[in-house]
Length: 304
Image 1: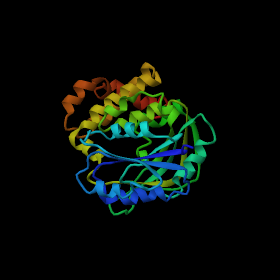
Image 2: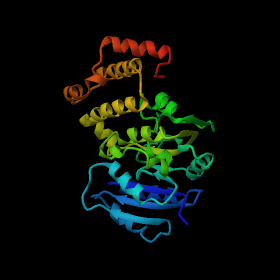
Image 3: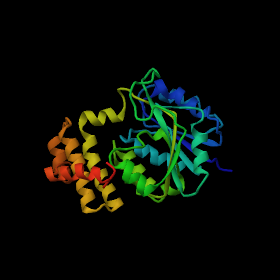
Image 4: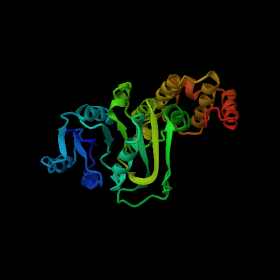
């Protein structure tokens, strides 16, 4: 009998956090799962750590890449292809889960086959597990919100990636089979377009409990994307794809362009000229576009 959940742990040079991550999965209150361990040619001691779990009954696969593929999202695709579970949890190798996370999310997913994504809230921690004094979701309310995917993406996913850490979410594998796999070709924003496409396949559940710890450290892909400016190029692709998927009206597109033109103008972007050349229709709007955005906020054009 197949496990209910497949837990994919994609790793690259996270040896200092790897044991804690794997043990936080093995310690889940909900135990109907398999673990798929993937390593993208790490240069630290990750392989030695992973090999210690080779014969663990919960571990179904350990795969070591011979060459680094340069994208965490290609690792996601590889793990999903191996997954036997109905639900999938991409548990990033430097994060930590509360014991109740998987059970809480599976319980919500089981309530309706139309639910394609369920996610909990996260706190931010540093390399020593100390909670950072900032974050997006720092308090438990125990509320549970079920939202139609179209509305969720329009209201939550156009301003930023609201599901900002894969470790906080699980999703239905059958829904994944319906989405475009172009996300794997991204280096930085693949998760953003991944969640947008997936959420549009059904309903989304937000569990307002802090059950995930999202680690912040110098080795993060997110920090590298800001440093080299690669994030902005990929953001442009994501936003244009999202606008097409949502079939936004001309006014909504102008609101979106106004928002990101205003944001772009206020940021230090290393490759500003390149970004504007590629995505002038996203980041190079006019003063009138910004006015549309500001005016649109009052009338809830995009809930931005």
